[in-house]
Length: 104
Image (cartoon, rainbow, N blue to C red):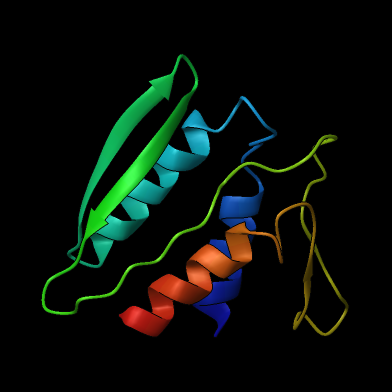
């Protein structure tokens, strides 16, 4: 569980307010490749893109978004280090990592 929390904090630490999602998409592409998935960036606009992911044996479709509303809020942990707070922690970067780990 520690790895998932540290991965989520790393992902949330990337500012991805609307129109600035490219770095989050690039992080996600690298992250998915660590699990052996094929991930490709599909450019939409100058600093925006989609991440197309093709797994190995399952036929699932996950759909989400990496952009968050402004202002950018850095992630924090509660004292017990069991809860993560910050922009995108539940909508939708946290959901993306949950989907990845559920399918992995």
